[in-house]
Image 1: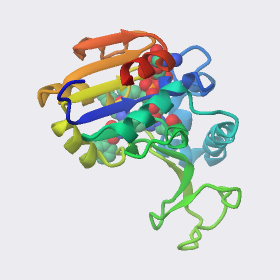
Image 2: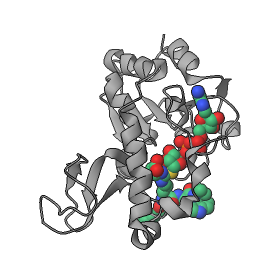
Image 3: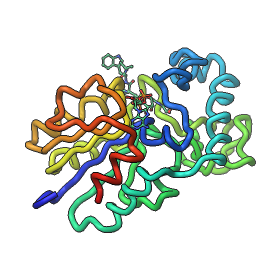
Image 4: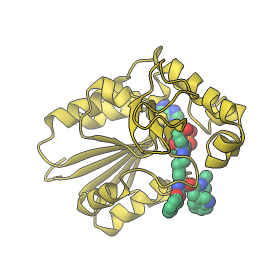
Length: 228
Ligand code: BV8
């Protein structure tokens, strides 16, 4: 990657698929068992908190049984070695990027292993001591919720993401269907600012036509080949 100074990498559920983490919109995907509106909206949390907590508890528990794959590890190597700007923006709420060693990373849709107090805004690690009906350790209110960005809620750190997109020389999208906004619009923002664009995905995404280059295949093979 000659004279590529600043790189922004967007990852989606596809980068964790080879670790055994279910994607959303594929066969047997996460949403299969549920309508999105039933488990991933503020209204769902208000209407049926037990269902929403069960959906996220199941995924949180499953995390203990999975490991980062070659794609996560390759991005962590890039992070450690790349002298220019690098930001990995993940839509994923698993901790596989961290466990692979990535540092310059942010979770725009939240994190399974974090609890958010809807009353005071403080975040706590989601440990066993934090079942949904427990009090917030900071303010004592019964207002703990998954630290997850539901549909209709503003994704986290959007200003930081938009600033990085404006500076990016290269925008890389890995393992996302391009179905969810604002993440699905990042490639257009990056192009608008003159960045080169590369998509690595198992199959065409809803945004493939916006990319200057697309590579088809499993992230576990494509990402290490690209990083090396
Ligand atoms: C907001 C929570 C505004 C965490 C998620 C109409 C038009 C445009 C937009 C909208 C609209 N109506 C509503 C909206 C907005 C809405 C939206 O985009 N809806 C869509 C469905 C149309 N967006 C929002 O509501 C967002 N907020 O807009 O706020 C606002 C403004 C001001 C003030 C307040 C609010 C919030 C979006 C976040 C929602 N939360 N998840 C969780 O439960 O995990 S979204 C959910 O989908 C996940 O976060 C996931 O990351 C995301 C995207 O899915 P993908 O990661 O792409 O996964 P998917 O399964 O779809 O695809 C996997 C891909 O990998 C596939 O392409 C597959 O081929 C590939 N693959 C599989 N295996 C491999 C592989 N690739 C490589 N290797 C492999 N081995």
